[in-house]
Length: 76
Image (cartoon, rainbow, N blue to C red):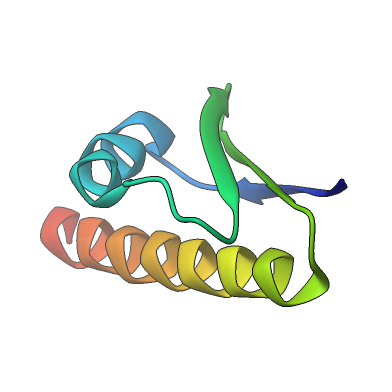
């Protein structure tokens, strides 16, 4: 089993996670978990294969970035 842990600084991490959660269905290739810690989002992705690990990382980083950008625009 391979695991990647990524921390992303964010002004409102819980809002971002709440926006992403409805799209967080478990995939056959990977398992993903999102948590908050102060002003950070902690992403953990696990997979048995490197392709699954990379797919999970790319998918969630894209979702987090897009959601975070929308929250920042909304707050401006």
